[in-house]
Length: 80
Image (cartoon, rainbow, N blue to C red; front, side, top):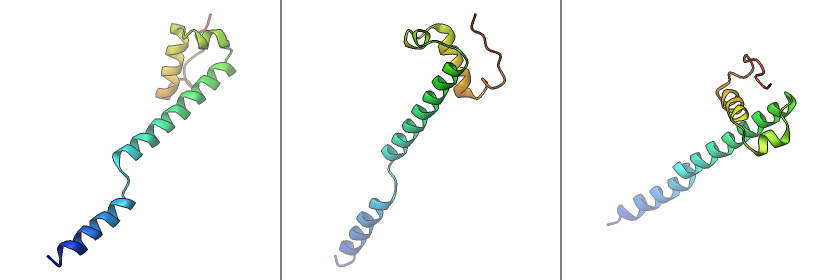
């Protein structure tokens, strides 16, 4: 019985410092949001209008998907 209390206390103390999956998911979601926002900014720099972005046209969705995949730097601007 004496060893159970210190062991439980140690486990509880360690659990405060170990990141939980929800922490990791929150961090990943935040970084994905930052990546998405930077791709939208790149789209604006390349001449896409606010209405294109707000209406989520197919071409802008493809542009942002390529940007997130890291392929947009090499891809040509496809807007007509």
